[in-house]
Image (cartoon, rainbow, N blue to C red):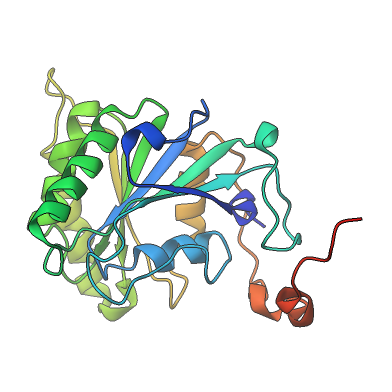
Length: 247
C-alpha cells in the first residue's frame, strides 16, 4: 500500500498567482497529450478518476493539484484533506498538444507551463511521461529545455511499454539514456535525470515508479504494491451515496 493512495483533489489553477502557498514538496507530471499521463497518475494513486483525461488533445489547460497526507486510504473519495496535515502535492500539468488550441490560449498555456517549471520554488522535480514507441518528440524536448536549467531531477516514464517487444524496450531505454545524458550542468556534470519503462495496462514498472516518486517527494515509499481491488469495487454502494446532512 502506497502513501500516494492518499491523494485527493485539492485545487485547479490557471494563473501563477493562484498557486497554493503551502511550503511542501511538489512533483509535477508532464507529457504530451495521449502519452498516458492521466492514466499513470490514476494507477499510482490507485484511483480511476483522480486525474482527468480529455478526449481532445490540448483541451485541459489548467494545473491540477492533488494533496498527499491529511486523508487516509479507505476514506470516502470526496473527503477533503486536512490542510495542516498535507505533506506534499502531486501536480498534473496540462498535456501539451497544441493542434486544437487557439493561438491566444496556446500562448497563455506555454507561458503558464514554462514559468511554472522554471520558477516554482516548492517544485522538487518533474515526471515526464512519453510514449515508449515515440519518445522525445519536439514538445518533449521543449519541456526538457524549459526544465533542465533548474538542475532539478527529471524521471522519465516510457509509457505503454507493453506495446514493445523486449528488444525494442531495451532500445527505447538505451535511446532515452543517451538523450538524457546530453543534458549537463555548467560544470559539465550530468543532470539528475533518470528513465524507466512503464505500462499502466500491464503494471510494468509500478513499484519502481512509486519508490522514485516517494523519494522525490520525501515520503516513505511502500515496500511493494499489492494487487488492490479498484476503488469502484470497494463498497460500491457507499461510493454512490452523497454525503449525509450535517447535524
